[in-house]
Length: 591
Image (cartoon, rainbow, N blue to C red; front, side, top):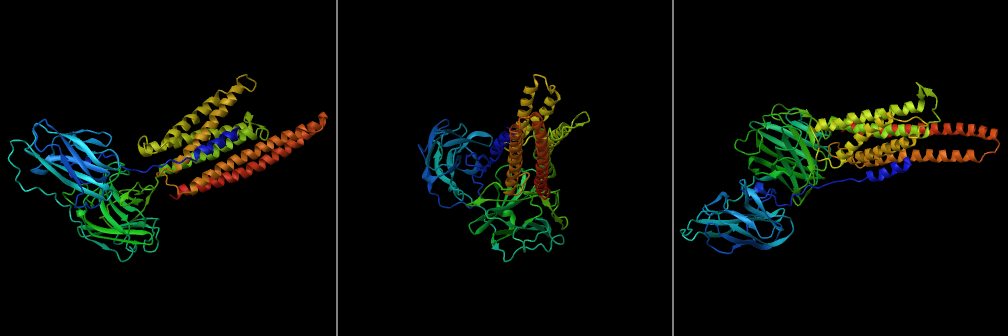
């Protein structure tokens, strides 16, 4: 039955949960002022959509129907502005006609200042009502930004101007939308970056340690070279999507100064951005960067740029004469749109000032506390508990001699189970210390971990109240003890399967999954062998001669043979268990 429960658990465990970050909900309040999507591409100049209104004059309190129409589009942002000041705040408010396709946004802390889409589904027409405020200007102009695809969009498409009845004719030359900043010129790199100057002229971060991008395609490389009052940045790595790095005040994403090199077809876009929490980066203007260059060769992306050490007046750019943690990440991109990095970013062990003096530094994609958490849990639930279960199930008769007042098998079993509980308690605390609280981005793993922790503490408490051997409650205790223990083992292994896929531990795949499956199969196989052996031994004794003395003699011989077989199986099992343990702990230690 133990085998059945454990086997059932192994099928539950192999479920892996993944998610891809996407932002199609239309909650683009951060873009209210500029009305520019944070896509990092150039807006198309010739609009193919238009705005129409139900009337050309209005009075305060009027409600005017506004219609956006044109070829199929996925997203939009509609606002009304004073015609004399198109860069000013939105005017009036909107009322929805169809809440299934449009939603109100809060801009300038006012709900309903703007309207956007609710989903990325294609649409050709949107209708809403605009409510004229009591303090409306004489002339109001409607503006809309329309997104057809991620890199195809139009910004601030002008709509009609509506006026109050007694207002003077609008004769001021129609304001034009200021063109987007001219991007700095981009050139092509003619050769690969070199690590030869790392520690002499360059401040370098490399993974693996001391790799050279000129010789090793798998090398992730980031360097900073000070040149008077500016810094030249070089970034290289194997990627078909994007490479990025960020300066951070701490080891968590959020409020960071980030830079991305995004591959699109056979081109690389170099894009500054800033991070607001654990969300999609917000793209910024490239005006602060110079000497942009890139190269694609043999699956390796390389890009470089120059920026001033200090950029007074430029939002979201950090001064580089201060120490920061440095993140280095890579991930997938499609049609210029980036997705969440597939592995944990490389993060420096401490804060560094990249303009101070050249040096070689390293980093890790997994921190010590998380490594210790994974290692302790593996030892507890793959080694000590597994051995303890086998001893209690199959080795009572083998080690039945008294040892310190109790049978030897029981003393070993109790020691291993208490060790499991102790290791679990220590491992349970470590992620909370690392995160400073609960992790809301770890899926089901922490919830299963809490259940395992409760059961691991409950099991020895139940054992402390074990009835005597002939007590009528002993049968109930045995079943309860087995049920709680089996449930804890199943849930613990499930938690470990899910935990191995979390980016914080960053175990190399897919062998991590194969190793866990291999260990589970090793344990289940050992239990099956011992169960079959026990059954065959009992049958062998039953069919012996009916003479009482012959039965006793045969049983003694069979029992001795059985003990020898069990000891051999146990020795082989321990060797295999230790092998799996060494493989797993070695992988964790190398991260």
